[in-house]
Each structure stands twice: as C-alpha cells, then as structure tokens.
Image (cartoon, rainbow, N blue to C red):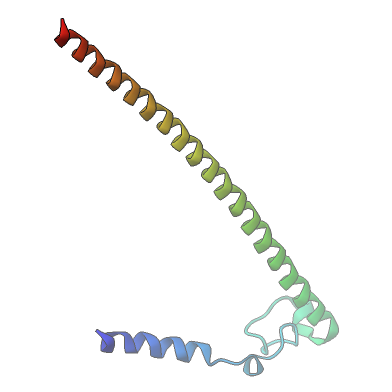
Length: 112
C-alpha cells in the first residue's frame, strides 16, 4: 500500500519546487509572468506592477467576500438544523407522554 502512494507524493514534491524567481514578478513585462495581461502589464515597469497588485487585491477581496457569504450560509443551515432538532425532540416527548397515557389506560382496564 505504501508503494502505491509514492508516485503521488513525488508529483506533489515536483509541483511545489517552482520558485517565483523563475517566473518573474507579476506585471514585470511580457513573457516574464506566464502570459499576457494587457498592454499596461506587457509594458512592464511601475504601471504593470501596480496593475498586477490591483488585480491581486481584487481577487483577494472577492475571495474574502465569498468566504463571508459561505460562512453566513453555513450559519443559517446550522440554525435551521438546530431548530429541526428542537422540534423533533418536542415530538419525541409528546409521543412518550402519549405512550405513558396508553400504558396507564391499559393498566387501569386490567384492574377492572
């Protein structure tokens, strides 16, 4: 079983060995950061780096908003399930009371 996992482990190691120095800085110019990103980023320099920073900030904010929305949705689901559990517990107690009433009724019928 351990031998089966070795190829996967090896591929994870090789993927993680890429260093940012080999790719260049984002916004540093065409061909340095893995593809074109528009005329400003192709030109490189301060404007390209600024545009790359703005893009990173945009995606960071988007990810934070998505995580916040997901957290709110999960909290709503938790509240819903807690309410359902409370309702089910009330129904269980009601059924238990009814069973006790029926048992008492059966006992009282046997005494007559």
